[in-house]
Length: 107
Image (tube, rainbow, N blue to C red; front, side):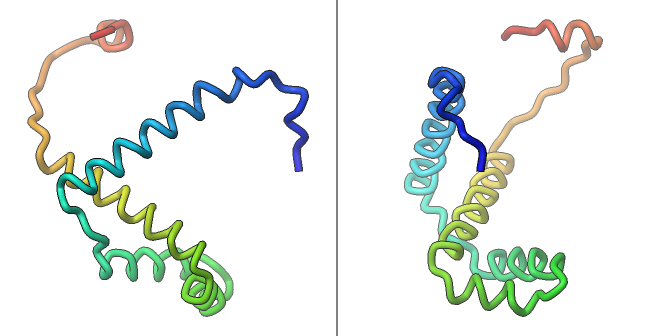
């Protein structure tokens, strides 16, 4: 385990603040839009994840018997559902630009 006591607090503060804000925003969108966990999607995600391990059955058992792990995976699936929800409602307009224009665009 890495000892982070020698690092200044402000090194982690900005990232921590951003993560908290994003979590609050996602939580609010879930509540406002009435997004519920898609159990089929959860099961599929769990199956895909377990399949990437040498002993998938143990991974499945871990997530079914460990509430904390299951809640974490449910949160990940819900976040994906929120992203899909936003993308479904997004209006996209094309704009021609070159690489420098894209990289220097501050709007």
